[in-house]
Length: 356
Ligand SMILES: Cc1ncc(COP(=O)(O)O)c(C=O)c1O
Image (cartoon, rainbow, N blue to C red; front, side, top):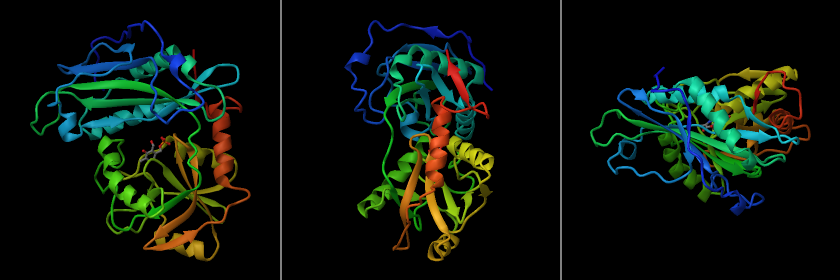
């Protein structure tokens, strides 16, 4: 763990708030940002003074390493408001640990966990008014780290910027999703960076995802890069398969992101007595289960949409439609998870963290 110059959080106040200019009922996901941002620079081998200051543009050299070598990682998490106006984070420690895991893989110095937790709670507390109540409304929180050293030599940067920016969002409902199961392109490889939230993982998916969109699909379910045999995860979601009444998801590996929603759903399912299996499921097992009627559901799980039911998948040019389930696990666990996030249900796992 790296050290900081000082653990004292410096706060520079904004003169005005732009909150009145925002139409909270009609937000484009991640397009409006709050009044403040968190910033902490790394130089001379230490993280400098952690600072919260008014949100604004950065001025950077075009030779900063992030622009040339993509040395950048990020996180995605949310704050929720209950009907009494109290604001909560959901399992923030998981995101803190994950950004440091991602940083390590990208040769970026890790950020002190306690300072990050304090910064998160402080900035969210300062921006409580931006967290709208109501199911589906939340404040999307985007921590990220970029390499800022000036110079185009292909080596790890000696300077970095850790930031947190935040955007109010409405329910992220994209409807039922049709997916393509990857049989050519790959998202990640053994020993690669798929298990890290590295910026380049996302940019690299845009082209194959555009090809899928041209054919009427919204997402890709990635398979292993060696044989395209095992089902792994979607672009920004882990994936669950319900075969008969067993909920199956792929094991985490260095190709798959360790999603917070995935592990929370596994816990809720276990608690509800639903049989879960964390195992490698093959595409041919999926196709066979679809044909013999034992495949009941497929759904994606991630912070943005909580769960996204899949209505059809395509593999090697065949399209397989899924029937809608009356007693869908997707709906059950989405409701249970949101009830915990919005402080409407008992939190027996202690996942909620109240922001004072
Ligand atoms: C590649 C990938 N898989 C899975 C997830 C889901 O993770 P989480 O549930 O922590 O949002 C995300 C989103 O962060 C992702 O980018």
